[in-house]
Image 1 (cartoon, helix red, strand yellow):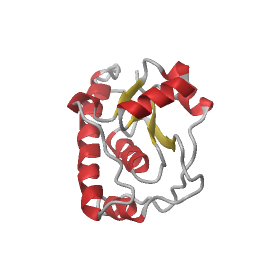
Image 2 (tube, rainbow, N blue to C red):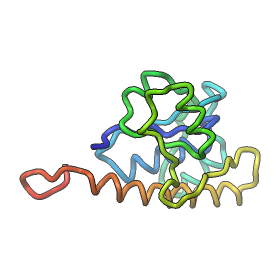
Image 3 (cartoon, rainbow, N blue to C red):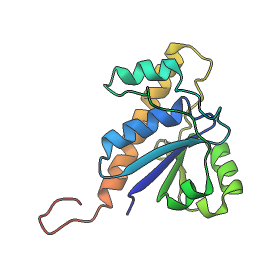
Image 4 (cartoon, rainbow, N blue to C red):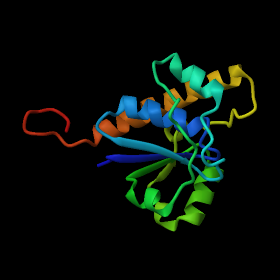
Amino acid sequence: MVKTILVVCIGNICRSPMAAHLLQQALPGCSVSSAGLAPPVGAPADPRAARLLAGDGISLHEHRARAISTFMVNTADLVLVMDNDQRDELEFLFPQARGKTFRLCEFLKADVPDPYGCSMSMFTIVLELIKQGIASWSVQIEATAPINTHGEAS
């Protein structure tokens, strides 16, 4: 059962913080965090990402980029990356991630392109892809949640 999710991208200032916050909203019973493979540690979220999520009522004001660690990988039940190159790099650096690392848009057979340095339109496209990926993972994760004695997912 998935209870802890780690969302990873390169810089941890655009895609992974957006995805982590939206995943947390979609799956309140899970603990969701994000990190980067090569982040500018301590940097805030990209202003365009923050502006887009503010439209969904989510604040990225407190977010600061952080680097992925062995502890994060070891404690995650599921690690979501943006593309196959990131999965390959992550699994090379952290072999224990094999078998629990997938693309955010795995079920859509799609990568989530990096919008860093691009227009607001590109950020909007990326956010829509992220939302589609989250919707597909939410269905999968909720389908595997155990049923408690009251007939509700626990």
